[in-house]
Amino acid sequence: MPVDPFLTPLLPTPHLPEIHDFAAWRATEEANADAFVSQLIEEAPTDVRSHTAVIAVADGGMIELGIFRPDNEDVLPAHLYLHGGGWIAGSALSQSTSTIAKERAIGANCVVITVNYRKAPEHPYPAALLDCQAAFEWVITHADELLVDATCITLGGGSAGGNLAAALAMKIHDENGPAIALQLLEVPSLDLTLSQPSHSDRDLGTNYALHAEDTQRMIGLYLGPDQDPAARYASPLLAEDVSGVAPAYIMTAEFDMLRDDGALYADKLRRSGVPATHSLQIGHIHASSAFTRVMEGARRWRGEAINALNHAHAEERP
Image (cartoon, rainbow, N blue to C red; front, side):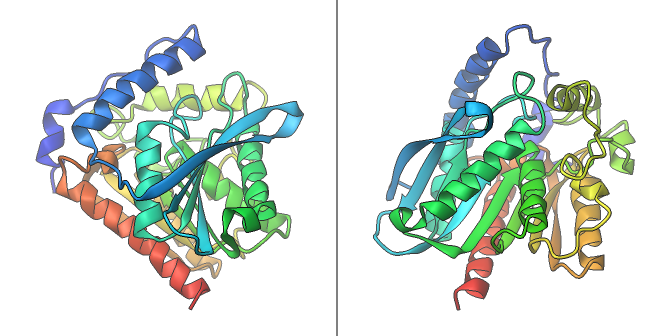
């Protein structure tokens, strides 16, 4: 099937610019993203209570969390959501991330916690992963005040956030942490060596939303000069042993150079005895799941992700 007709006039998307001041560039990107939200993303549900929390992380740092819950006092499952942005951009408190959080809070009747993890290159790997782990541990510790069921927690993330969610699920398992009900990975980057067939597909890496050379740059900024891109928590797809990690629901886009990452990871998990579903979203590019105001396919994607969370909640809380 061809790319969704709505997307055709937008392609290929612009390349990542040369960046000399990352803080200023992020501020500009966030302002541009806010304008994009009003044009392309449906309005978020309004019957959601939200606030922020500030928590301590490694090396004396502090990060913000966004906390979103339906307007009730029930004890609910928790969903830790890790935003995308190539490990160098994006925000847990942006309009687009807040919309996803509110949609999932209402659609899956859960408390959603978004994590404003520190960004590369100022904070290279594994800082973002450790920040996400600190957020997870904070949710467990504060479950009572959050009115969260600590026995029913899911992880979610898109793109770079999908990488972090998969790595966090693996790290929690490796360290004998609490069981995770589901890892919901959307267009995840799971092999930072870029050695899968779709990574070298010139069409996929040139003509759509994610460009091969930009991806290589972002990985380099995330890892810094001294880290191994094949390391277990950098590239979950390359990990030798994935047995026992959380069940997975993995959604990939047809016209995306990261397409193989999710499909192959689902296969690897299943071969290791881990329940895993792979869902290829036909006609989509890397970022188009967000376009819910203008694409029926994006609304179907959103509904499928929420259904996966509801199914995980039903499995854990019959």
